[in-house]
Each structure stands twice: as structure tokens, then as C-alpha cells.
Length: 490
Image 1 (cartoon, rainbow, N blue to C red):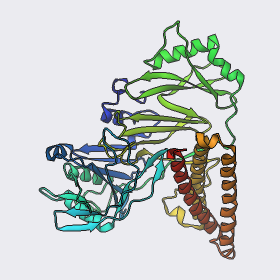
Image 2 (tube, rainbow, N blue to C red):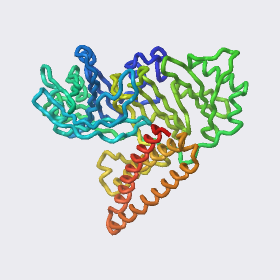
Image 3 (cartoon, rainbow, N blue to C red):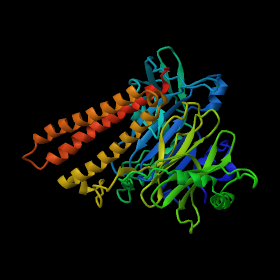
């Protein structure tokens, strides 16, 4: 089955798109679970972590003549005693305006049934997932989450409001909350256990356990340069005929026989090419077909997806708007692992509720750990007791470090590709030198820290842990740098 049904490409049926996007044979679809009711929805990813999201009620706002979009997300990993965390976000856009990126300075209070009052903390820093920027979030305290759950699961009407110091009110709906939270418990095997939210009990068996994210190893050797001969295939008569046949079998947007076929050709390996062309158009979405093509041309092109928006350096991205205003999106990313394109990430950003440009939350359905080269923790389940030994701590830490370093490299590539940077050689050089200096700093600092443990078995775990912590901080710094450069008025 193709990744997206051709009958829902306009984007007006976002729910259908959301469901159908996880039916590709490249996915771990059987492990993805999703349910919605009223103003609430729950989605669980392939590690069995679940995220429940609730919103304001649009009908109530219309009746009260209000415009106060609000959303809450509650997240929980699988397993006994997994902590439930929560965040809240307030509408940042109006349908006829642009994203308001200024951080709020108002004090906001959570009010439940007018008898519980608790002030929210400050906005969290901006962060990035899948090249989407998320901002304006407030973390809920453990007590606030507990009080919120009581209200969301109580019988009868509950009043949940967020009120700022200027008197503006955001009302969180409870319509569907109990059913969705019960489904979250069900997905994680917690119904009738002490760890359930809705139906507590004494059962302690058959809990769904957390699952380690699959590891995708990207080849260490760089992707070969696309040659002039490769590019010339785009105008080769025989090659065009082969690709036109593949296009006829996959796509809606097929040029007439007397019209040119616009092909993009890129070298992937010494004997494989990536070939792409426009496949379909809709009101505010489009998709390109991407094929894996052997050099010998004895085997037919293999379709990877019909809904790509970009291919570069062994990575294929898909991206869909749920509607034209762009307040809800979904996407997928495929990565070349040396033998095939595999699904590394799939996600949505929640319902179309005018919370933020691009959507309210990052809600993954497929997650993975991408590294370059061999997996340093091959054969180790880093969510098990294997990770508690010195060897396990070291190797699992090295795997996590390799993943963060890969993300860091991707952000650096994105910064380098920005027009303001790419067109300024002095600035480009400065960023490269800064990264080189930072790497020297990281390695020297962590070596010094390791040497304080040189007589003990913890030296290597300390070294890896130090590098991981500093690299994570560096990743966040560069994500903020990219954010600033992207929206700065040069």
C-alpha cells in the first residue's frame, strides 16, 4: 500500500491522513496505537510511550464569543511506576495572522473548579524536532498534573481554566478526557493496576514494557558525488521511458507522452541511484515519487514513497499540512542504512486547533536511534539490566552519544545551508572554527574528568557521560542559533 491514500491528499481529511500514513510496509505500524474522543486524543509510539493531548472546545468558545485556544499534553513511558509529565501551551496564532513568537511575560494560574489555584512556571526554551520549532510551552508540576488528572476523570462537569494576570481566560475541555485516559491505560496494560489513571486495581502482571528504539546505522563512508553522467540520465531517452512506466504505476500527475518528464537523479552508492519526480498536487500539499534504481537497469525501479517533499544525502522527508493555515502537520523520514531506506521517524503535531503555526506538539509514532557506523551497543538492550554493568553503561552511553552527534551534524548542515551563512564566507568559516574549538574543549574537559576516576572502573562511563552531557547542551545551543538565524531580519 502507498504511504498516503490518493483520495485524501487535499489535506481536508487530516484524521484519515493521520491514520493512513502508518500503513506503509516500511513502518512498524502494528506497534502504533491512536484513539480520539471529544476534544482529547492519545497516541503511542513504537517504544510504547504514550502521549495524551487535550484542547479547548471550539463550540463552547464560539458560544461564549471567545478566542482562547489552549492545549495540554500528558506523556508517559511504558512500565510500572513510569512518571506522568505534563505541559500546557496557549494559542499563538489567529487564522488571519502570523505566528506570534514573542514570549509571554504574564503570570498564568491554573484554576480547577475555582477552588484549586496554582501558578505556572515560566515558558520553556524553544526546541526543535524534525526541523520543526516548538515554543511557548509551560511545564506542569507534579502536583498540577495530579490535580489536573483528578478533574479530567471526575464524574460530572469539571471547570479547568488558565487565567493570566490581565484576566484572559483559557478553558480546557474535559469532553472525552476520561475515555482517552482509559485508553492510554489500556494501551500500556495498566487497567486495574495501581499505576492506572482511571481504573485502579491490584493486578501486577501483563504490563506493557518499554521497548528500545530501533537503531539505524548510517554508512560511515560518504555518499558518492553525483556525476555529470548520472545527471545526463534525466535526458536519456531509454531511461525516461523506463521511469515513465514506473511513474504511470505510482502517480496521478503523469505528463502526457509529448510533454517532458522532469527527473531528479542523485548518486546513492557505486551501483544505485535515487530518482525522483513530481507525483501529485493538491490544494496545499504535494508529493514526489522517489525510486531506488540499480545502475545495471536489469531490475525495475523500486518505489520508496510517492509523497516525498525532499531528498538529500540518503534522507527522504515527507511533510503534510492538515489544512491550509498550517496549524497541524504530519511527516515521515526515511534514512538509507546501506542496503535499504528504512523509516526512522513518523509524527504528527496534533489536531488542527489554532494553537501554533506548525502544530501544538511533537507527537511521534515511530522513533529510532540514528548513528553513523557500527552500533557500539550492538546486542545490548539499553532498557534492561544489561545497561547497569560498567560495560553496559559505557556502550549504551556511546550509542546515545553517537545519536546526539548525528543530530548535531544535521543541525550544523542546516545552519551552513542558510542563505545568510552560505553567502557569507567569513561567517561560514567562523562557525566551522567555533565547532572545531568546541569539540577540542569538550574532549579536553571530559578527559580531565575521566582522569579523576582513572584508578576505578567508572572512568569510561564518566568520559562518555561527560561527552554526552556537553554534546546535548551544544545541540540545544545550535538549534537556538538556527532559530535565530532563520527568523532574523538581515
